[in-house]
Image (cartoon, rainbow, N blue to C red):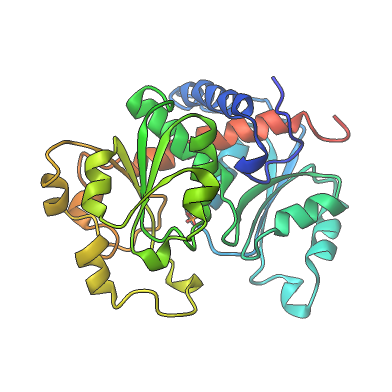
Length: 310
Ligand code: CP
């Protein structure tokens, strides 16, 4: 099995067949991860660098674990504590690492398009682990995997994406993926956090009343308010955001049906999501994190055949 692309820079570049292949391969790796010995030799001769120029908990650990489960050699680079502080460029940093015979680069960067730039200049396979406000493809794949597990498929399923859509790479990757796979999408939140172009560009529903979005959907993906990316005031206060757009137990009970709640993490508890929802039986947040390892194993495994020396 092969993907149609050399790199995973974004869901935008994948075909529906690629997405299906990744999700089906992840199902097999999830079965491996249930065994007493959770390791396979698939990437035994491959070295991967995890290049993180921006903070991460889940994605960094998930990729590292996925690499170890596949028997790859891994090295971890974080910009803090490196020669980036002495002015070394991204390209110089990566070329120095690659000269030590590294085959694949997993990269997170605060600049949108950083992995696309790198892909034009280096021979190694690149996996985007989140670039600025552009895409977070493996998050969308693990979200889709989790939806498929819970609802039995993606086609025709109703997914609400709620919160700070404007600053979210998770939202954009989810929208690309869910549209390619035939799901229906409603984006919901305050008008100031939903880009005007979305409705026409992607044929998604836009809803400013979160209760209506919840009542419409089968599953809701609640997104973090990304204060670090907002350079102007886009809503009155966190407290008022929670009152108007936060997912509370009371709100969920008022819609008269049971839906699943997702969140990519990290959660702003008491802002976009209350703790009694995040920690409830309706929440599949930790299952998303668990599924992330199998999905990233699938991505790395499927792209490993694209190495120039392979
Ligand atoms: N979901 C996600 O990207 O989390 P991290 O920022 O902790 O990797």
